[in-house]
Length: 256
Image (cartoon, rainbow, N blue to C red; front, side, top):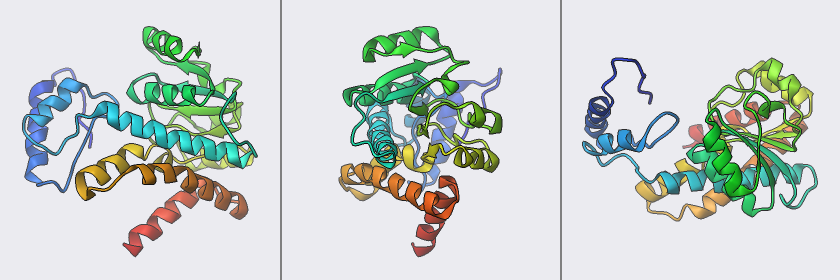
């Protein structure tokens, strides 16, 4: 779901109206914050419906835990047993990027962070004892793992050729902009975890907690194993991880 920003948008009224429309669906659709939304936006939605999560800290932490498991899967693919000392570049220092940085810092990773908001990047770098990198340089930074956690579609064909990292695993939506870019990563032997796996922690938390009443932690912990399986299958088949993940998803939907 997207609310299109424009100069004449009356945000509070718009998000309250959105809450009314969501409420009419009776729980068949639930939502939470994402890129561009504020807590005030979500509170306006919540004024008209119960089917919205205001638990930003819980959801972003769930994404971070799942993403850590997926980066650990990348390390396993390279024969590494831990993240301690691994160099990781994080693009985006917002709610999710910040949670990811703090989670990876606890694992001993050496972090580079970047954001178009200089102050936000500096604050996060100080918090995780990391290094600030200019936004124009972060995607090509000399690191082990690149973790895009801001806008989507950041890895195009040209960008794929400039990447120094041996793995890409981030929480942004649709990290790879095209199938051709995905093929370029495969050709350059750069591991990639599709975002439908890497950033699934929040969805798992929300579904388990709000729909099923289940403990989400085993499922969040399993995301790393899923990522590892998908990357192995891609390597054996000569296809991209994105293609393997989509095939796996379609099979599970059909079975359901």
